[in-house]
Amino acid sequence: MPNGARPQLTDEPIIPEDEEDLAAEPAPGSRRHVLTVDAALAGARLDKVLAGLAPDLSRARLQALMAEGAVWFGEAPVTDPSQKAKIGDYVVAVPPPTAAEPLPEAIPLTVLFEDAHLIVVDKPAGMAVHPAPGSETGTLVNAVLAQCGDCLSGVGGVARPGIVHRLDKDTSGVMVAAKSDAAHAGLSALFATHDIDRVYVALTRGAPDPRRGTIATRLGRSPHDRKKMAVLRSGGREAITHYVVERTFGPADRPLAARIACTLETGRTHQIRVHLASKGAPCLGDAVYGSGPPAASVRDAMAQAGLKRQALHAAVLGFRHPITGEILRFETPLAPDMAALEQALAEKV
Image 1 (cartoon, rainbow, N blue to C red):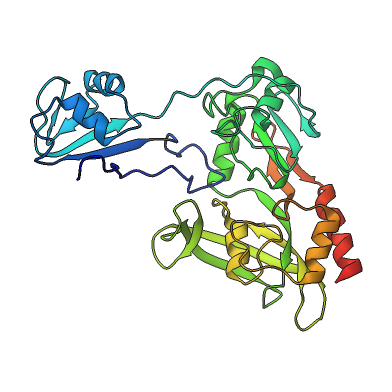
Image 2: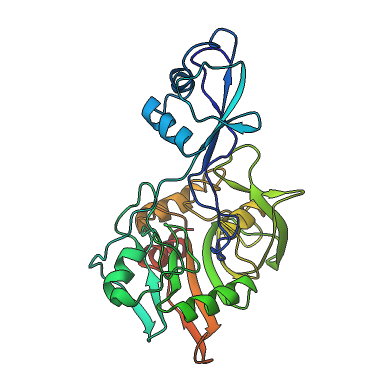
């Protein structure tokens, strides 16, 4: 690698493969740097050479990583930062940063159900579920910590206590969080076996054909954009969405928009958004998966409603209480922006 070249990153930022089952998710932020020393750099002090190849790692940081046994050359760890650099590949394993413990924040929550074991809320659009880079505060975890106090389960990890599933930041709707370890384990088992009733409502550009059906694909990272998910021919994980078009807007033979109910059989990252887009009916307002602009009348309706996110709402969540065995089912109406959009589509399209 020429002097000053960027290092190869062999482990990319983690995108969880399964949106609902968080227990198996690797630690986010992990990196493995492969730094190649060529003849022009060989013989110089090692920590200085590696710092030049990886500008985001200081010499002090590299020295600490060497002391921890996190720098390797061939089959052996490198522990002496002052030794001379050799021609070849050095592997630097940079552990993810330690998550800061989230603090309670007095954020208003719409609580649908709460007992000693769990809490069910109607999450607003724009609220991240747990702290992450760019959303360190103001999350659902911060709000639930204030609501539930010290009883919130810690099984989900320091950064997301009690969380067993999640919604995208800009998706609204019903979510459940565990308040005890036993409830966390029980809910995690239900999500892992897909023994959960989950129905989402989407407002889409156009409508899928046929008007009722099942979308069964493999979902994984897009080979073209690793920050996105995509339908894959091979690899990835099985993803199944059952859908029915509840209402269309515009000409009957070629609707300009639609209201679609989607029932999840699996819960993969961005599953509904990717599946609907694959049928030519992406969620309105979806900046990631919504290829092509909607019709002018639909755009007018979106502007009138003030929609600034993907039009997707988790309307129904049903499950057996992991402790009491009671059958619980929660249903919430569309968030105000989506309700306004549906009304505007009925008036304008």
